[in-house]
Length: 182
Image (cartoon, rainbow, N blue to C red):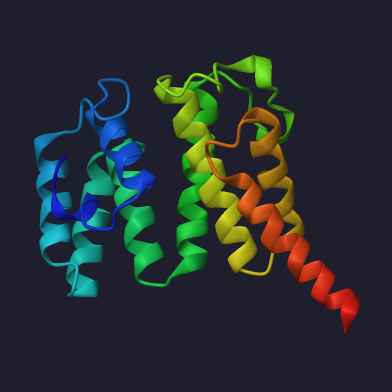
């Protein structure tokens, strides 16, 4: 899918989302009717209720499809509805756990469980980006311990930090330092 819902924000996450959606493993198999609803949601993004209705219709057709989940995540995130975005991030993490056959708890995932170090390995990368979204949104919503735990797991799985988890940890460290200085 190359609709406006996935373009215009720039950065690494756009490239990852486009590669995920182009992948037969994650982007393939989206029913045409669901794709049409995603496109309508993108075109009507400025009409929140209308766009959200189209997203819900796409979700009803393809509830576990990566394109639908990413569209919902982005919609909620950019509308500032962070609690709902966190819920979708959690669903994405669960989906990524299943796709990568990593069990049912991201806390138990180990670096050797998947090819996290190979940037071209799309399924592990989908897991990492989903967990990063979960970590970031947890932090934004004041769930700092939850956010730190997820960010530290990211660094454990991606020690080269290509996903950018250290930035999240640095923010938390600065927040803690400021609290102790007061």
